[in-house]
Length: 120
Image (tube, rainbow, N blue to C red; front, side, top):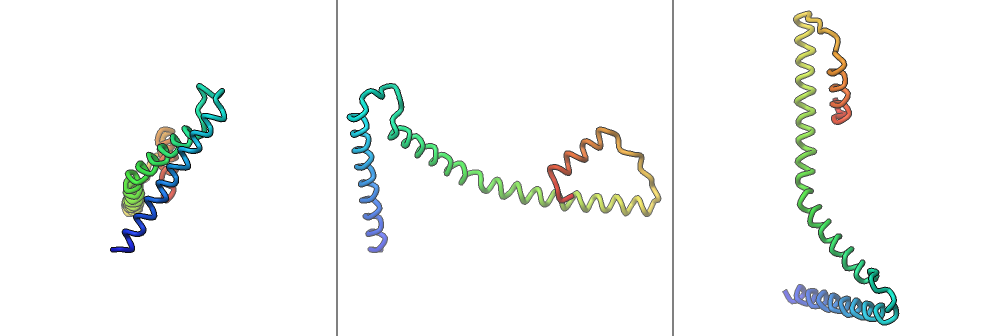
């Protein structure tokens, strides 16, 4: 427990040190570049970038399970579709059923399906 407390204290000191450096940097930029009014200084841009990174991490954490589930569902759909196509081909052989050629619409649909599901 004491080790964790020491680590926490070190982290807090480092965080405080970074805040101090940021404050000094902001102060120097404002004093050394007073003509840059209306323009965003590097510190402000850095703060905005940090906020954007934080939002990205939050969104990534939120959507990662969704992406995993989507990939699993795609795999299940491919398996089911392949099984269905195999069954249809076997039924065609057993019944000597000849299918009419695909229409242009069906060919387009088939191409789209194969582009989204390359495992077919």
